[in-house]
Image (cartoon, rainbow, N blue to C red; front, side, top):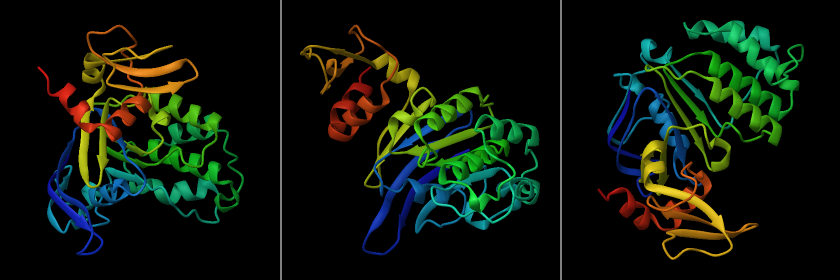
Length: 278
């Protein structure tokens, strides 16, 4: 569905954001694209949908070169950017203007999501709070039903209740075999229990790329008053210590995304060794 081969990109000749990246996003998955701010998550999204062009290598989305902006591709790709502008018109008028670009747009779903987010539809979009604007755009992006959906830091600007609503809505989505949803974030807890595959990038490189089933089979996550000798990562917590153990240990095999992310960022070699064992 999305393939990057020997992907190079930089905003200047002296500083490369990506240098020879090889990565594939397949249909039927909700991906968590994790990384610190400034690691290139937004740049990756812009190349996938054709807003930017690689300096070397290739990107294909749905079999197309995204930078050629083929209409057949554009109607099946939607990017919700982290930073956005909304017009001084009402939601209904805006949706009538934008929806025709997406043949599979579901007006009923859009209305349902606006209701779940408690968005006042009588107000002009420009008069809404940041959180209301974000929830409106999230609702529209989900209603497009595009085969590729890119959500760039979607929970930024949302309060705790709204983040919970976002997770509940994503959980209810039936990601069919022909859809690929990628959620980029540096707030790892916000997408826990949502994603089926985790990809971590840092300094233009892939540090980690595994599905959650494999993670659950390889690692367990637990807490206690002391840290077992077999722990491969541990940190103090209100329970004493939270830690990650190898697969043959007792504990919760539901991945703790935040702990896993910290392990990957602080000791990628340890994470790599676990996942390359037979």
